[in-house]
Image 1 (cartoon, rainbow, N blue to C red):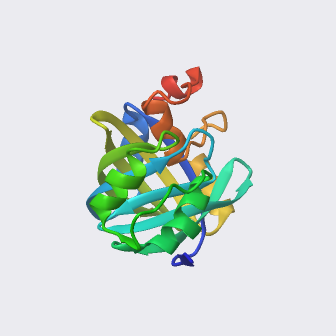
Image 2 (cartoon, rainbow, N blue to C red):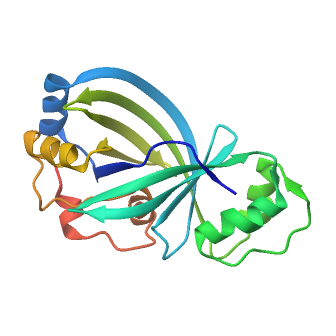
Length: 209
């Protein structure tokens, strides 16, 4: 079974090509506390946006959408495990989290390349997003902020996120930064599928500056 490994947090996230005004404001008001580069492999299905399943640094983890509140989403992170993963974990946790039937298994455990080549790439119900991220992390108003450049299967995009255990702090930070209530909160699975052409991109998402 996957184990919850962090405290759930409320998130507000936007995606777009550029956010010059918002980035300038964050750099002026917030304290830069770190930066990271990372490579992730996201596993996506056509319908499910309630579980965010990805592979990072030889580990598989997921976030589960626990609640939506006043336009925010509260996500709970869980660790599924390190590769090699036992077949029973893949069968009982990974595929149920993706909301699709498990395939036939030929091994009792799977190395990362075996998992991808034998179970993922050949599954017509699964889509894969290979991402590279360069993320600047900030602290402001008792919230965590990020500005991240993301490459998704060679397509480049930017995301800005506000998160906290306290949803009121996220809403307050949105207001301080001048983020309108009309701007859509977009989680990673939804954004990845839009970039990959698996679902339609709404006009309001394309116009965010």
